[in-house]
Image 1: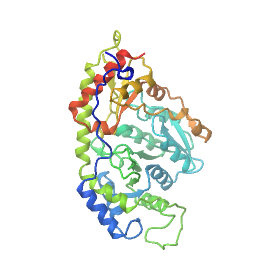
Image 2: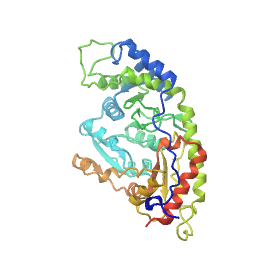
Image 3: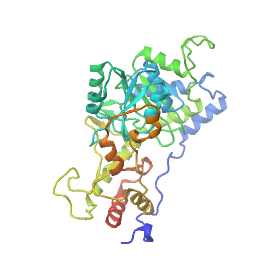
Image 4: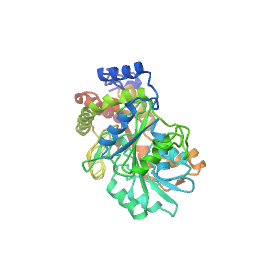
Length: 401
């Protein structure tokens, strides 16, 4: 069978679902109302940002929320609101988006890049423990790909050392850990509304927290150092304008009514992919034993304690040697485009030059070689089409150099 990249017939020619989905009627209605009101900014008297913050806080199991311009700014504001700044260290996982580390630098602190669990690729409590110093002020678990980090172990570590916990929940809208929503499991949680995320207004973010003083501090950081209820030109603290707009909040509010159904849809497709992967044959003789459990491609498992994975991504681990660049190009030619995923943060020269401390990260380095992603938009397809992913993988692995 000839690969499509070499002129053969592709496995799939139909387009995958687009993202974001088309606007629905409630979104059009809500956005139109904001546009016609003229109250577009968050400080003009509109209610959409306040409603969004309150609803997200409620869904996260905490009383307070603050809308922000994007999740990078949200992580920065959460760190500053928790008192993290110059001279402090913040532990971040090596397998995550660069903003997890750059937000720490923006706050004036030092990111300490540590390894992830070799199986589930989330921040390793053991690696984090080994990286704690007298300067460590916080840890930043990332709920990677929509599945929750093992928060019991990480919160226990933080409690032992008196550390703040900032959850990077940018990819995990609606996920739960031991039946508790992510975002509200640490001292602050941060969501993203960037274009690829499960809820999007093009850009945007939101910080949730349980402590009133932390809420006041985060709000002040995002509102030019003002105090809630204080004078407009009174700036008792240091802050910036990090606000979301009413128009963006109006796009996002109706999404909360359909989020759970979309999560169910992605989980159904992900489960179908996992079943179909059992049909992918080994290109050569399979190993007698090992983590692949007899399969050349497996789904990266969820961390312990996961009760709902929001499936922003489906991460696949390839257990056979393969040319990564060729495989990605060949899969795209088959009509099944996959993503190569993150490079390890510790290998980014810009972060090291900016002062990041890097611990040994062999698990993150292995993930950068062996793990491929199925993007969120593809997970919104009919589960019957999950067979296309397995068929294309079988074809490419069998014929790739």
